[in-house]
Length: 180
Image (cartoon, rainbow, N blue to C red; front, side):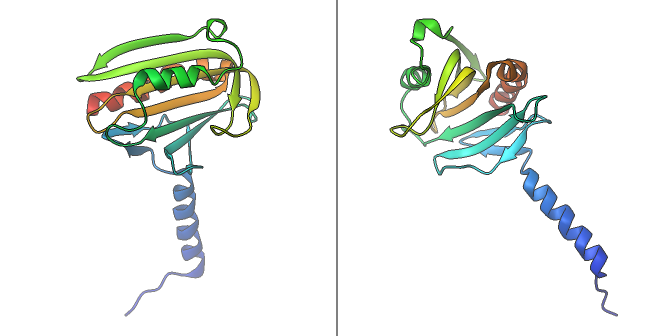
């Protein structure tokens, strides 16, 4: 006897599948690194072919959001660490000496890791395109160097939210390096 799903069972099965699919993966690969998304962060379908993954952090105020983007251009591509640090810091309206720029380097599991942090008026927008000034913003970035090409991870958003999310960001980065 052939068994078929009742319409209501089929509906619930499809709804649970699509709600899971909309959540996105909790773990994902960028370059050689496997990242695990913090529990409260949301998967966002990448908005550009240059972005390998995107996450979003939502603050206590629902309109308060920070974006976390992952880039990997392959071996010997995407520019070096210094070039990317300089580019990230130049995305602020204020000069470098006014954005509390902080750069920290470490070695985790034989990979060089560079953290970048800055606060001020972040100029959001595509390179070469129009920019939108976002005052009281913060950038927290990480560059994970690899023989397969560096992975660039950048969180931007309201300074208060980025600061509150920095421990989860660093944990996600360092766990990916330890697994590599």
